[in-house]
Image (cartoon, rainbow, N blue to C red; front, side, top):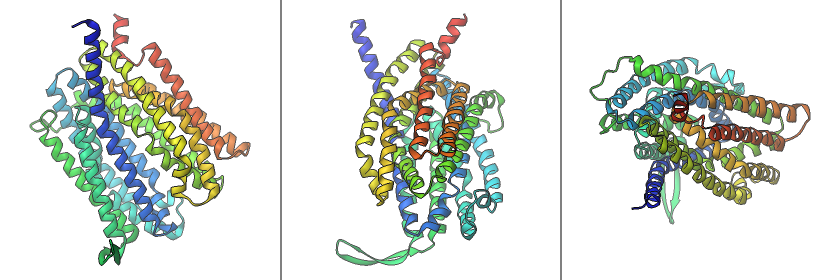
Length: 466
Protein backbone atom coordinates (compact mmCIF):
# COMPACT_ATOMS: atom_id res chain seq x y z
CA UNK A 1 0.00 0.00 0.00
CA UNK A 2 1.43 3.38 -0.98
CA UNK A 3 1.62 6.29 1.42
CA UNK A 4 -0.93 8.24 -0.67
CA UNK A 5 -3.39 5.33 -0.61
CA UNK A 6 -3.02 4.93 3.15
CA UNK A 7 -3.62 8.65 3.60
CA UNK A 8 -6.81 8.47 1.52
CA UNK A 9 -8.08 5.48 3.51
CA UNK A 10 -7.31 7.32 6.75
CA UNK A 11 -9.21 10.40 5.58
CA UNK A 12 -12.16 8.28 4.48
CA UNK A 13 -12.25 6.55 7.87
CA UNK A 14 -12.08 9.90 9.66
CA UNK A 15 -14.90 11.29 7.50
CA UNK A 16 -17.10 8.32 8.41
CA UNK A 17 -16.33 8.88 12.11
CA UNK A 18 -17.16 12.59 11.83
CA UNK A 19 -20.49 11.94 10.15
CA UNK A 20 -21.34 9.13 12.57
CA UNK A 21 -20.85 11.53 15.50
CA UNK A 22 -22.54 14.52 13.86
CA UNK A 23 -25.76 13.18 12.34
CA UNK A 24 -27.46 12.12 15.61
CA UNK A 25 -26.85 15.57 17.09
CA UNK A 26 -28.20 17.20 13.92
CA UNK A 27 -31.33 15.05 14.05
CA UNK A 28 -31.81 15.80 17.75
CA UNK A 29 -31.56 19.54 17.13
CA UNK A 30 -33.87 19.27 14.13
CA UNK A 31 -36.48 17.55 16.29
CA UNK A 32 -36.14 20.22 18.97
CA UNK A 33 -36.63 22.95 16.37
CA UNK A 34 -39.66 21.18 14.90
CA UNK A 35 -41.22 20.80 18.34
CA UNK A 36 -40.52 24.47 19.05
CA UNK A 37 -42.51 25.32 15.92
CA UNK A 38 -45.36 23.01 16.97
CA UNK A 39 -45.41 24.30 20.57
CA UNK A 40 -45.53 27.88 19.32
CA UNK A 41 -48.46 27.06 17.05
CA UNK A 42 -50.35 25.14 19.77
CA UNK A 43 -50.01 27.81 22.44
CA UNK A 44 -50.50 30.55 19.86
CA UNK A 45 -53.96 29.15 19.07
CA UNK A 46 -55.00 30.13 22.62
CA UNK A 47 -54.43 33.83 21.92
CA UNK A 48 -51.81 36.52 22.41
CA UNK A 49 -51.97 36.44 26.22
CA UNK A 50 -51.13 32.73 26.26
CA UNK A 51 -48.24 33.28 23.87
CA UNK A 52 -46.94 36.16 26.00
CA UNK A 53 -47.22 34.12 29.22
CA UNK A 54 -45.17 31.29 27.71
CA UNK A 55 -42.63 33.38 25.80
CA UNK A 56 -41.93 36.14 28.31
CA UNK A 57 -39.65 33.99 30.50
CA UNK A 58 -37.79 32.43 27.58
CA UNK A 59 -34.64 34.44 28.28
CA UNK A 60 -34.51 33.14 31.87
CA UNK A 61 -34.89 29.61 30.53
CA UNK A 62 -31.98 30.17 28.17
CA UNK A 63 -29.83 31.73 30.89
CA UNK A 64 -30.27 28.76 33.24
CA UNK A 65 -29.85 26.20 30.46
CA UNK A 66 -26.69 27.94 29.22
CA UNK A 67 -25.15 27.89 32.69
CA UNK A 68 -25.71 24.16 33.02
CA UNK A 69 -24.50 23.54 29.46
CA UNK A 70 -21.27 25.39 30.25
CA UNK A 71 -20.62 22.96 33.11
CA UNK A 72 -21.17 20.17 30.60
CA UNK A 73 -18.47 21.64 28.35
CA UNK A 74 -15.96 21.22 31.18
CA UNK A 75 -16.78 17.53 31.46
CA UNK A 76 -16.77 17.12 27.66
CA UNK A 77 -13.20 18.39 27.43
CA UNK A 78 -11.96 16.26 30.34
CA UNK A 79 -13.71 13.02 29.32
CA UNK A 80 -12.87 13.34 25.62
CA UNK A 81 -9.21 13.84 26.55
CA UNK A 82 -9.23 10.85 28.97
CA UNK A 83 -11.05 8.73 26.40
CA UNK A 84 -8.47 9.59 23.73
CA UNK A 85 -5.62 8.73 26.11
CA UNK A 86 -7.18 5.34 26.79
CA UNK A 87 -7.65 6.21 30.47
CA UNK A 88 -11.06 4.65 31.04
CA UNK A 89 -10.78 4.96 34.82
CA UNK A 90 -10.35 8.75 34.60
CA UNK A 91 -13.35 8.96 32.29
CA UNK A 92 -15.49 6.94 34.72
CA UNK A 93 -14.33 9.09 37.67
CA UNK A 94 -15.30 12.20 35.71
CA UNK A 95 -18.72 10.68 34.96
CA UNK A 96 -19.20 10.12 38.71
CA UNK A 97 -18.30 13.76 39.37
CA UNK A 98 -20.81 14.76 36.70
CA UNK A 99 -23.46 12.86 38.68
CA UNK A 100 -22.43 14.68 41.86
CA UNK A 101 -22.50 18.10 40.23
CA UNK A 102 -25.80 17.34 38.49
CA UNK A 103 -27.38 16.62 41.87
CA UNK A 104 -25.96 19.83 43.40
CA UNK A 105 -26.95 22.07 40.46
CA UNK A 106 -30.34 20.40 40.05
CA UNK A 107 -31.30 20.98 43.69
CA UNK A 108 -29.87 24.53 43.65
CA UNK A 109 -31.76 25.62 40.55
CA UNK A 110 -34.96 23.94 41.75
CA UNK A 111 -34.90 25.92 45.00
CA UNK A 112 -33.86 29.12 43.20
CA UNK A 113 -36.48 29.02 40.43
CA UNK A 114 -39.34 27.88 42.66
CA UNK A 115 -38.63 30.56 45.27
CA UNK A 116 -38.37 33.30 42.60
CA UNK A 117 -41.25 32.15 40.39
CA UNK A 118 -43.54 34.94 41.57
CA UNK A 119 -40.88 37.63 40.99
CA UNK A 120 -39.59 36.62 37.54
CA UNK A 121 -42.66 37.98 35.64
CA UNK A 122 -42.23 41.32 37.45
CA UNK A 123 -38.52 41.50 36.55
CA UNK A 124 -39.31 40.60 32.93
CA UNK A 125 -41.90 43.42 32.83
CA UNK A 126 -44.77 41.10 31.95
CA UNK A 127 -48.15 42.82 31.70
CA UNK A 128 -49.88 42.82 35.13
CA UNK A 129 -52.93 41.00 33.75
CA UNK A 130 -50.98 37.83 32.94
CA UNK A 131 -48.30 37.86 35.65
CA UNK A 132 -50.08 35.26 37.77
CA UNK A 133 -50.46 32.92 34.79
CA UNK A 134 -46.82 33.47 33.80
CA UNK A 135 -45.69 32.72 37.36
CA UNK A 136 -47.69 29.48 37.47
CA UNK A 137 -46.29 28.38 34.10
CA UNK A 138 -42.72 29.17 35.23
CA UNK A 139 -43.16 27.32 38.55
CA UNK A 140 -44.46 24.11 36.95
CA UNK A 141 -41.85 24.20 34.20
CA UNK A 142 -38.97 24.35 36.68
CA UNK A 143 -40.16 21.88 39.31
CA UNK A 144 -38.34 19.03 37.46
CA UNK A 145 -35.05 20.96 37.40
CA UNK A 146 -33.05 17.93 38.59
CA UNK A 147 -33.99 15.69 35.63
CA UNK A 148 -33.56 18.67 33.27
CA UNK A 149 -30.02 19.16 34.59
CA UNK A 150 -29.34 15.45 34.19
CA UNK A 151 -30.49 15.57 30.55
CA UNK A 152 -28.06 18.38 29.73
CA UNK A 153 -24.96 17.21 31.61
CA UNK A 154 -25.33 13.45 31.11
CA UNK A 155 -26.04 14.02 27.42
CA UNK A 156 -22.73 15.89 27.13
CA UNK A 157 -20.90 13.14 29.05
CA UNK A 158 -22.20 10.50 26.63
CA UNK A 159 -21.26 12.60 23.59
CA UNK A 160 -17.75 13.10 25.00
CA UNK A 161 -17.34 9.31 24.97
CA UNK A 162 -18.48 9.18 21.34
CA UNK A 163 -22.10 8.15 22.03
CA UNK A 164 -24.27 10.70 20.23
CA UNK A 165 -27.05 8.24 19.38
CA UNK A 166 -28.35 7.70 22.93
CA UNK A 167 -28.95 11.43 23.65
CA UNK A 168 -30.55 11.72 20.20
CA UNK A 169 -32.96 8.83 20.83
CA UNK A 170 -33.93 10.19 24.24
CA UNK A 171 -34.35 13.68 22.78
CA UNK A 172 -36.73 12.32 20.14
CA UNK A 173 -38.70 10.50 22.87
CA UNK A 174 -38.93 13.66 24.99
CA UNK A 175 -40.17 15.70 22.04
CA UNK A 176 -42.80 13.13 21.07
CA UNK A 177 -44.06 12.94 24.67
CA UNK A 178 -44.15 16.73 24.88
CA UNK A 179 -46.18 17.16 21.68
CA UNK A 180 -48.59 14.33 22.58
CA UNK A 181 -49.22 15.65 26.08
CA UNK A 182 -49.58 19.20 24.74
CA UNK A 183 -52.35 17.93 22.48
CA UNK A 184 -54.11 16.26 25.41
CA UNK A 185 -53.44 18.80 28.18
CA UNK A 186 -53.88 22.16 26.41
CA UNK A 187 -57.19 21.66 24.61
CA UNK A 188 -60.60 20.70 26.08
CA UNK A 189 -62.60 17.61 25.12
CA UNK A 190 -63.79 18.20 21.59
CA UNK A 191 -65.26 16.56 18.52
CA UNK A 192 -62.73 15.73 15.79
CA UNK A 193 -62.83 14.27 12.30
CA UNK A 194 -60.22 11.98 10.75
CA UNK A 195 -60.68 10.43 7.31
CA UNK A 196 -64.44 11.18 7.46
CA UNK A 197 -64.65 9.47 10.87
CA UNK A 198 -66.00 11.69 13.65
CA UNK A 199 -65.06 10.97 17.25
CA UNK A 200 -64.73 12.66 20.64
CA UNK A 201 -61.16 13.44 21.71
CA UNK A 202 -60.58 13.78 25.45
CA UNK A 203 -58.74 16.89 26.59
CA UNK A 204 -57.90 18.39 29.97
CA UNK A 205 -58.52 21.94 28.73
CA UNK A 206 -55.79 23.40 30.95
CA UNK A 207 -54.42 25.86 28.37
CA UNK A 208 -51.05 27.37 29.31
CA UNK A 209 -50.89 25.34 32.54
CA UNK A 210 -51.43 22.20 30.48
CA UNK A 211 -48.48 23.16 28.26
CA UNK A 212 -46.30 23.55 31.38
CA UNK A 213 -47.40 20.17 32.78
CA UNK A 214 -46.72 18.47 29.44
CA UNK A 215 -43.20 19.92 29.29
CA UNK A 216 -42.49 19.06 32.93
CA UNK A 217 -43.51 15.43 32.43
CA UNK A 218 -41.47 15.17 29.21
CA UNK A 219 -38.38 16.65 30.93
CA UNK A 220 -38.76 14.20 33.83
CA UNK A 221 -38.98 11.21 31.50
CA UNK A 222 -35.93 12.43 29.59
CA UNK A 223 -33.87 12.87 32.76
CA UNK A 224 -34.76 9.40 34.04
CA UNK A 225 -34.00 7.75 30.69
CA UNK A 226 -30.61 9.39 30.18
CA UNK A 227 -29.59 8.60 33.79
CA UNK A 228 -30.45 4.94 33.15
CA UNK A 229 -28.44 4.94 29.88
CA UNK A 230 -25.40 6.51 31.55
CA UNK A 231 -25.57 4.05 34.46
CA UNK A 232 -25.71 1.07 32.08
CA UNK A 233 -23.12 2.38 29.61
CA UNK A 234 -20.29 -0.08 28.90
CA UNK A 235 -17.51 2.52 28.80
CA UNK A 236 -18.47 5.60 30.78
CA UNK A 237 -20.76 4.20 33.51
CA UNK A 238 -20.00 5.78 36.92
CA UNK A 239 -21.19 2.67 38.75
CA UNK A 240 -18.81 1.75 41.55
CA UNK A 241 -17.09 5.18 41.64
CA UNK A 242 -17.15 7.74 44.47
CA UNK A 243 -19.83 10.43 44.31
CA UNK A 244 -18.16 12.80 46.77
CA UNK A 245 -16.28 15.90 45.52
CA UNK A 246 -12.97 15.07 43.81
CA UNK A 247 -11.04 18.25 43.06
CA UNK A 248 -8.58 16.40 40.84
CA UNK A 249 -11.50 16.06 38.43
CA UNK A 250 -13.68 19.05 39.30
CA UNK A 251 -10.78 21.54 39.27
CA UNK A 252 -9.79 21.03 35.60
CA UNK A 253 -13.43 20.72 34.54
CA UNK A 254 -14.43 23.99 36.16
CA UNK A 255 -11.38 25.82 34.77
CA UNK A 256 -12.67 24.94 31.33
CA UNK A 257 -16.34 25.55 32.21
CA UNK A 258 -15.95 28.93 33.94
CA UNK A 259 -15.03 31.06 30.87
CA UNK A 260 -17.70 29.29 28.82
CA UNK A 261 -20.24 30.03 31.54
CA UNK A 262 -19.34 33.74 31.52
CA UNK A 263 -19.45 33.71 27.71
CA UNK A 264 -22.98 32.28 27.66
CA UNK A 265 -24.15 34.60 30.43
CA UNK A 266 -22.73 37.69 28.71
CA UNK A 267 -24.12 36.60 25.33
CA UNK A 268 -27.55 35.97 26.85
CA UNK A 269 -27.67 39.44 28.35
CA UNK A 270 -26.60 40.79 24.97
CA UNK A 271 -29.54 39.08 23.30
CA UNK A 272 -31.88 40.66 25.86
CA UNK A 273 -30.50 44.13 25.05
CA UNK A 274 -30.63 43.40 21.31
CA UNK A 275 -34.25 42.24 21.52
CA UNK A 276 -35.24 45.30 23.55
CA UNK A 277 -33.86 47.63 20.87
CA UNK A 278 -35.64 45.65 18.15
CA UNK A 279 -38.92 45.91 20.09
CA UNK A 280 -38.61 49.70 20.03
CA UNK A 281 -38.82 49.67 16.21
CA UNK A 282 -42.51 48.80 16.15
CA UNK A 283 -44.78 45.81 15.61
CA UNK A 284 -43.78 45.03 12.02
CA UNK A 285 -40.06 44.99 12.83
CA UNK A 286 -40.61 43.00 16.02
CA UNK A 287 -42.74 40.41 14.23
CA UNK A 288 -40.32 40.14 11.31
CA UNK A 289 -37.35 39.78 13.68
CA UNK A 290 -39.05 37.14 15.86
CA UNK A 291 -40.16 35.02 12.91
CA UNK A 292 -36.84 35.39 11.07
CA UNK A 293 -34.98 34.27 14.21
CA UNK A 294 -37.20 31.19 14.45
CA UNK A 295 -36.69 30.37 10.77
CA UNK A 296 -32.95 31.00 10.89
CA UNK A 297 -32.38 28.64 13.86
CA UNK A 298 -33.18 25.57 11.74
CA UNK A 299 -30.42 26.43 9.25
CA UNK A 300 -27.68 26.45 11.89
CA UNK A 301 -28.34 22.80 12.75
CA UNK A 302 -25.64 21.39 10.41
CA UNK A 303 -23.07 23.78 11.87
CA UNK A 304 -23.71 23.01 15.51
CA UNK A 305 -24.05 19.28 14.84
CA UNK A 306 -20.56 19.31 13.37
CA UNK A 307 -19.28 21.38 16.29
CA UNK A 308 -20.16 18.60 18.73
CA UNK A 309 -18.21 16.09 16.64
CA UNK A 310 -15.26 18.49 16.36
CA UNK A 311 -15.10 19.03 20.12
CA UNK A 312 -15.23 15.30 20.87
CA UNK A 313 -12.63 14.23 18.29
CA UNK A 314 -10.27 17.11 19.13
CA UNK A 315 -10.42 16.11 22.79
CA UNK A 316 -9.68 12.49 21.84
CA UNK A 317 -6.69 13.51 19.69
CA UNK A 318 -5.36 15.77 22.45
CA UNK A 319 -5.64 12.98 24.99
CA UNK A 320 -3.78 10.64 22.67
CA UNK A 321 -1.11 13.34 22.11
CA UNK A 322 -1.59 12.83 18.37
CA UNK A 323 -0.63 16.12 16.70
CA UNK A 324 -0.95 14.67 13.21
CA UNK A 325 -4.53 13.60 13.86
CA UNK A 326 -5.29 17.02 15.34
CA UNK A 327 -4.11 18.75 12.15
CA UNK A 328 -6.01 16.28 9.97
CA UNK A 329 -9.21 16.93 11.94
CA UNK A 330 -9.00 20.66 11.35
CA UNK A 331 -8.11 20.20 7.67
CA UNK A 332 -11.16 17.96 7.20
CA UNK A 333 -13.70 19.74 9.40
CA UNK A 334 -13.19 23.23 7.98
CA UNK A 335 -14.00 22.55 4.28
CA UNK A 336 -16.78 20.10 5.24
CA UNK A 337 -18.41 22.65 7.53
CA UNK A 338 -18.10 25.47 5.00
CA UNK A 339 -19.63 23.28 2.28
CA UNK A 340 -22.55 22.39 4.57
CA UNK A 341 -23.15 26.03 5.50
CA UNK A 342 -22.95 27.17 1.86
CA UNK A 343 -25.69 24.65 1.08
CA UNK A 344 -27.68 25.69 4.14
CA UNK A 345 -27.28 29.39 3.30
CA UNK A 346 -28.31 28.88 -0.32
CA UNK A 347 -31.41 26.98 0.80
CA UNK A 348 -32.31 29.75 3.27
CA UNK A 349 -31.78 32.43 0.61
CA UNK A 350 -34.10 30.70 -1.87
CA UNK A 351 -36.84 29.66 0.57
CA UNK A 352 -36.90 32.77 2.79
CA UNK A 353 -40.14 34.28 1.34
CA UNK A 354 -42.00 30.98 1.58
CA UNK A 355 -40.81 30.29 5.14
CA UNK A 356 -41.75 33.77 6.31
CA UNK A 357 -45.17 33.30 4.72
CA UNK A 358 -45.75 30.18 6.82
CA UNK A 359 -45.70 32.26 10.01
CA UNK A 360 -47.23 35.54 8.87
CA UNK A 361 -49.84 36.71 6.39
CA UNK A 362 -48.78 40.37 6.56
CA UNK A 363 -46.94 41.41 3.40
CA UNK A 364 -44.81 43.99 5.24
CA UNK A 365 -43.63 41.41 7.80
CA UNK A 366 -42.86 38.81 5.12
CA UNK A 367 -40.97 41.34 2.97
CA UNK A 368 -38.84 42.66 5.84
CA UNK A 369 -38.17 39.19 7.23
CA UNK A 370 -37.15 37.93 3.79
CA UNK A 371 -34.67 40.80 3.39
CA UNK A 372 -32.87 40.13 6.68
CA UNK A 373 -32.87 36.35 6.19
CA UNK A 374 -31.25 36.72 2.78
CA UNK A 375 -28.63 39.01 4.30
CA UNK A 376 -27.69 36.50 6.99
CA UNK A 377 -27.81 33.59 4.51
CA UNK A 378 -24.81 35.06 2.66
CA UNK A 379 -22.80 35.18 5.90
CA UNK A 380 -23.49 31.59 7.01
CA UNK A 381 -20.27 30.02 5.61
CA UNK A 382 -18.20 32.55 7.60
CA UNK A 383 -20.15 31.78 10.77
CA UNK A 384 -19.78 28.06 10.10
CA UNK A 385 -15.99 28.41 10.11
CA UNK A 386 -16.17 30.14 13.51
CA UNK A 387 -18.42 27.39 14.90
CA UNK A 388 -15.94 24.66 13.95
CA UNK A 389 -12.81 26.36 15.28
CA UNK A 390 -14.65 27.17 18.51
CA UNK A 391 -15.67 23.49 18.74
CA UNK A 392 -12.05 22.36 18.32
CA UNK A 393 -10.98 24.80 21.03
CA UNK A 394 -13.71 23.69 23.44
CA UNK A 395 -12.69 20.08 22.93
CA UNK A 396 -9.11 20.74 24.02
CA UNK A 397 -10.19 22.97 26.93
CA UNK A 398 -9.36 26.36 25.39
CA UNK A 399 -12.42 28.36 26.48
CA UNK A 400 -10.88 31.72 27.39
CA UNK A 401 -10.32 32.94 23.82
CA UNK A 402 -13.90 32.08 22.70
CA UNK A 403 -15.17 33.94 25.78
CA UNK A 404 -13.20 37.08 24.88
CA UNK A 405 -14.09 36.87 21.18
CA UNK A 406 -17.83 36.45 21.78
CA UNK A 407 -18.10 39.17 24.44
CA UNK A 408 -16.22 41.68 22.27
CA UNK A 409 -18.31 40.79 19.23
CA UNK A 410 -21.61 40.89 21.09
CA UNK A 411 -21.18 44.10 23.09
CA UNK A 412 -18.78 46.23 21.06
CA UNK A 413 -20.11 45.35 17.61
CA UNK A 414 -23.66 44.01 17.76
CA UNK A 415 -25.07 45.90 20.76
CA UNK A 416 -23.14 49.17 20.36
CA UNK A 417 -23.68 49.14 16.59
CA UNK A 418 -27.39 48.40 16.90
CA UNK A 419 -27.79 51.16 19.48
CA UNK A 420 -26.16 53.70 17.18
CA UNK A 421 -28.09 52.55 14.11
CA UNK A 422 -31.57 52.22 15.65
CA UNK A 423 -31.60 54.58 18.64
CA UNK A 424 -29.31 57.39 17.44
CA UNK A 425 -29.57 57.44 13.65
CA UNK A 426 -33.11 56.05 13.43
CA UNK A 427 -32.37 53.21 11.01
CA UNK A 428 -34.57 50.09 10.95
CA UNK A 429 -34.36 46.32 11.36
CA UNK A 430 -32.04 45.84 8.38
CA UNK A 431 -29.34 47.90 10.10
CA UNK A 432 -29.69 45.83 13.30
CA UNK A 433 -29.21 42.59 11.37
CA UNK A 434 -26.27 44.18 9.55
CA UNK A 435 -24.66 44.69 12.96
CA UNK A 436 -25.38 41.05 13.79
CA UNK A 437 -23.65 39.99 10.57
CA UNK A 438 -20.71 42.29 11.37
CA UNK A 439 -20.46 40.47 14.71
CA UNK A 440 -20.30 37.12 12.87
CA UNK A 441 -17.66 38.43 10.45
CA UNK A 442 -15.53 39.67 13.34
CA UNK A 443 -15.70 36.19 14.88
CA UNK A 444 -14.63 34.75 11.53
CA UNK A 445 -11.60 37.03 11.44
CA UNK A 446 -10.57 36.25 15.02
CA UNK A 447 -10.99 32.49 14.65
CA UNK A 448 -9.20 32.57 11.30
CA UNK A 449 -6.24 34.19 13.07
CA UNK A 450 -6.30 31.40 15.70
CA UNK A 451 -6.46 28.78 12.97
CA UNK A 452 -3.67 30.21 10.82
CA UNK A 453 -1.35 30.76 13.80
CA UNK A 454 -2.17 27.35 15.27
CA UNK A 455 -2.93 28.80 18.70
CA UNK A 456 -6.10 26.66 18.88
CA UNK A 457 -3.88 23.55 19.04
CA UNK A 458 -2.25 23.01 22.47
CA UNK A 459 0.00 20.23 21.11
CA UNK A 460 1.60 22.68 18.68
CA UNK A 461 2.10 25.24 21.45
CA UNK A 462 3.67 22.60 23.72
CA UNK A 463 6.00 21.56 20.88
CA UNK A 464 7.13 25.17 20.40
CA UNK A 465 7.88 25.59 24.11
CA UNK A 466 10.20 22.57 24.19
